[in-house]
Amino acid sequence: MSERGRQKNSQRKTKQKRRGSSERWLQRQRKDPFARKAADEGLGSRAHFKLQQLDERLGLLRPGMRVLELGAAPGGWTAYLESRLKGGQLIVCDSRPIQTNLETVVIEGLFGEAETDARIAELLTGRDLDLVLSDMAPNITGVRATDQARVMDLADLALEAAESWLKPGGSLVVKLFQGEGVDDWMGDLRKGKQFAKIRLVKPKASRPDSREVYAVGQQFLVTG
Image (cartoon, rainbow, N blue to C red; front, side):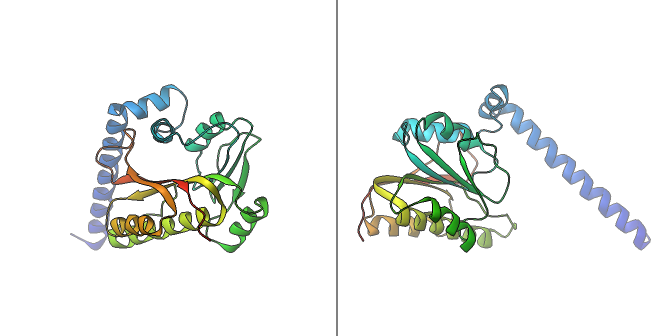
């Protein structure tokens, strides 16, 4: 077979793999009750139900709260937050577009970058927040060790936001992926005694085969 023929054959196999992956994803979506419910109710994605279940289980939200959401795009959590924070304030942050209502404050940029952090700090006058939520996730490289290290770096950033801006009694919710570093990170969080209650939670709306979990710290204790 000529070099050109080998290239065409390789391209054809790649396209077939992509079609197969797309079809498997579509089949999984059709079978998934939370994906179907999100589509039926015009909610965009199952993310809405993840936060709803965390809220119902842990009592995270109430009207009048001031909340910072990191990694907010495309807005699955944002819509739920807007429905719960009547009379409060929601600040959302992401470099990608976020669907919001007019009252929500949008910070365009990546949290952890100096300019983005400064813009958030301008809105806050100290320990102003009742809740810090992070649904941040790295761009996947496919190298598990690299991807997991990036997940833990983002968890550290979310914790830094909580340490800087949470009120006494406030809460932190951080998305993690089970793997290297999670046990140590949770252990350090407990040793730090910054939160009276710390737990690792997997909402039912998270797919059973997903490594996704959420670290939740409640009743923030200001130590410095």
